[in-house]
Image (cartoon, rainbow, N blue to C red; front, side, top):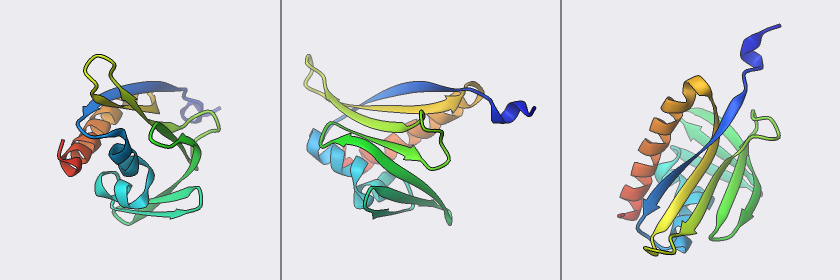
Length: 131
């Protein structure tokens, strides 16, 4: 039996303060135009399916669940049913700051690389928003 196909991925969550309203942030997380600003080179959408392109290759993700201005959950077509990536928007009760929480899955050995990638992506997002 090949162990590489049965490696267990772990769920992890990262939090980023973002200086903008939840409504503006949600547009960057849930629309092709918004996602193309920071997440992928090109983004197309047909109904609840998004097509993300980087350097000529395309990955497909379906929107599994969402509540406008609160969260959106995607599942890559190559992920098992119980894995997803999610953007959740929260307001800090203390500072009233908008917090972007990203939940994703990665193998233990890939965790640091994934965190670095999300940090880089969110820096692009903050730059686009002007945060």
